[in-house]
Image 1 (cartoon, rainbow, N blue to C red):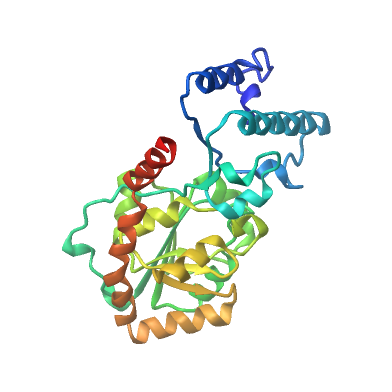
Image 2 (cartoon, rainbow, N blue to C red):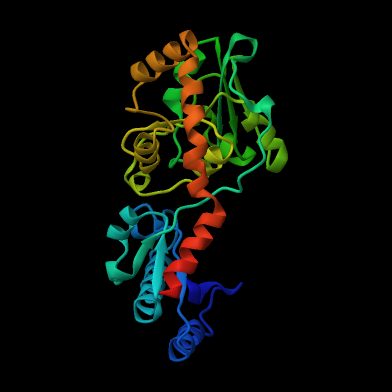
Length: 291
């Protein structure tokens, strides 16, 4: 939602209030950092089903936000620098990457990797919209009874896409949990999943769940052609595969035969996770804005 339209009635009754506050900060030598979470509005799919007039007004308001940011910010933080190529009106010089982080939960010995009941356990938590397509994962796991897949998503989202997925097999479980109850399932898995169909938006989107998986020291299975997949590959915290059923099936069979590969990744993932806590993100902002 553009800043000037965030009142409950969505009428811009005070369109300059943020601009005036930011200008006050500038005049008082107070540095400003602002996090710009996403840019869905820049894509053709934005506003599907809405009035063209409303869409045009919203996009104009989004551009006004960016004009204000260019004039007033010390730093415009983005989930990734790759997203910067899609952000108009703002100079790259003031952009900086500020991905999500994790809370560094306490992990017990019971969270060590082991194939429980002889099965390889996969876990996915997140959306099930067109931006998060898991069809090939469902098809392959459905053919592998020694692999268990738990998908944690909102009930309404699952209902909306259910008919587009294969019939569920006994080893695929759909749950709708949050908080500690969701985390209990995450702790039990051997591999956390971000094996979604690559799309242009996924090339720069930085999923919160990627860093949550890191916090729980879970090796990650991700798709090539996504920013998450690039991170997993570069940091050696899991496996990045082409979005291909053959490649996925081969990997899962290999891990079933030799689960020590999972343990090897777990032994190194902790060192990477230390650099991606929310505290580390806060230290980065303090350093940037103190310059």
